[in-house]
Length: 142
Image (tube, rainbow, N blue to C red; front, side, top):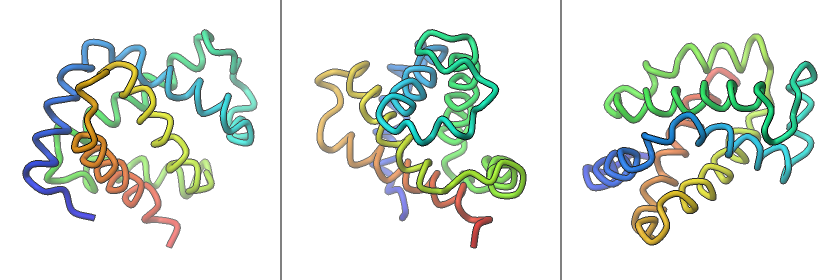
């Protein structure tokens, strides 16, 4: 899936609005992931998975920073996230379905933070972005 110029503008503009909360976004999305899809907890046996835990917050920040990097390099998402593709496919062996589940949780978090600014057009742009990120992260599984 290709992001249009308008999609890119919408993703970048809305990300600028939530970027001041970067420290919280990923943790909120991961907390939702573990709550809504408890099977995903199996990849984090060494974490304290309670919603306010330091482990969830720190890993969530890593996820948010990876998305931030991808948004800053929309012309080269693949190159920007290649190391994560390798890590998740070869070392962590994460089921690729989990990337889609996390994207759904990020949609909810973005909707909470953006409110009325998370319009249907913005949602579609973000959905395309998450699809692109998921494609890159799943690439090494093929």
